[in-house]
Image (cartoon, rainbow, N blue to C red):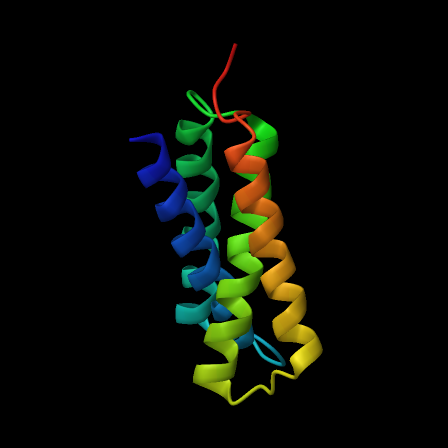
Length: 109
């Protein structure tokens, strides 16, 4: 269940971060509500995941997957360009998170 909470925390963080683009340059109510609700939901869900999982692993996965998710979504939704260096960096983040999670540091105690 903690992993599901973490996945939902990542999804809501990605949505909130993408919503920031809709607030750039001017105040718009709906994108701002998406940002606020998304970040509140993300941190709440992450707090539930932390009941079972270690903070280092949770934060690494949340930050890494969120970064990759926002980058990929921005490329698809907004036409932002990804070069080989950016893709390689995201691959390194994913590999690092997998190694951290596989290290056995995912449980309290």
